[in-house]
Length: 241
Image 1 (cartoon, rainbow, N blue to C red):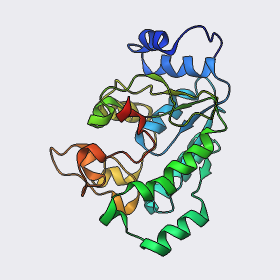
Image 2 (image 1 turned 90 degrees about the vertical axis):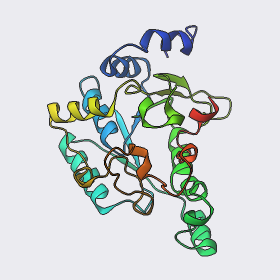
Image 3 (image 1 turned 90 degrees about the horizontal axis):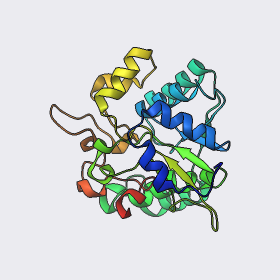
């Protein structure tokens, strides 16, 4: 950041009522080494907005090895549409081999999803975030109870390097799903074809299903678990915060 004497709390108070575009513009102006975490509808909106300020901003994606084929096609579509590089982060092969050898391919249905997500998502994310000073996510407050109080900017102690700092931006925190999709349609932004088949929040294929009328979008994720456990570890800091 340009002025380390200004606290994140002060900045959050100033930015909390600003538009996502202004929040992204601020983030990119303050941090050279910053990256967008990309996986779905909210994240591609961030890419669309960020390209107006820095077309070459870093973009990365977590490839768990269990994504839908439609999601892999979507990643390629976004890469070509924006002419950008998308860094693909994969899980550690040895850790994955040990998990599947000992517990099989669907252990999460029996003992919860956190161990599998830890290997396939959290560890690769930690590896990537160790190389940047800040990151941008597509979290929204209305996505779940665990995200209801997220600020637009926060000190990410969960993934910060030892003796280092990491700033996390959530520019869409105050937007609703309707606002996200209105922006997607207005700007003709590419989206995952699974959305047309009832999927809203899209993760790994075994852990994601379509939602019915009047169901909350997160009900399609880890549907066999309690609502308070519907975080994979990428944003677990929301709970403790």
